[in-house]
Picture 1 (cartoon, helix red, strand yellow):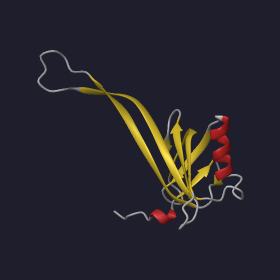
Picture 2: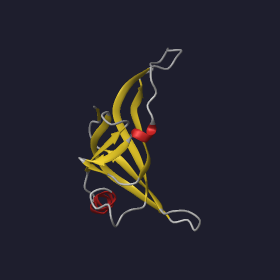
Picture 3: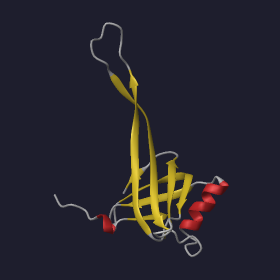
Length: 128
């Protein structure tokens, strides 16, 4: 099996590429519900609800990236969802409707300005 280079990944809002992405990560999870009964010696679980969160790290380009970074910031400020597509390569990606839950901007004196957008998916996430 061949490895996939991270350099071929990207992040998009719908069809619009988010500029200056340096990395993204996603956490897919399933709640595990305890179904253990009295008399059992071992815990038993069944799967419950699925969920997903993500974060996208960027080099700050907010004034210029109107369809990417600015759109993410506006979605957070207005409480509106975006279709967040996270590409692992040129053709395979995770997709779903997400709310931007946090924006962290860092301005270090000795380095470039960067930002991290945190997202909470709402509803199903697909892998294409």
